Image (cartoon, rainbow, N blue to C red):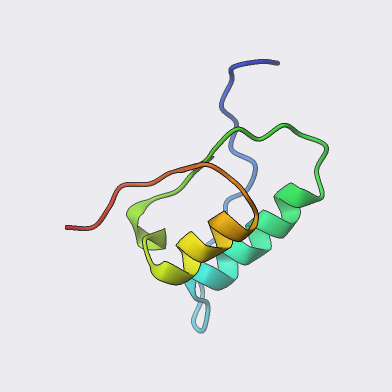
Length: 68
């Protein structure tokens, strides 16, 4: 199924969670799937240096609005 977007995971943040913890969990999940992921789409809550570093370390392209 080429050129389609799919939601692969959704998770509610609970007390004590950080966006970087959740992103690390999702990226590990993606790494374990046999899929050709071209980009990860995130909301602006993930715009921080830790999350950007995780995306870079896992070598995923991403689309994310930046916070003004």
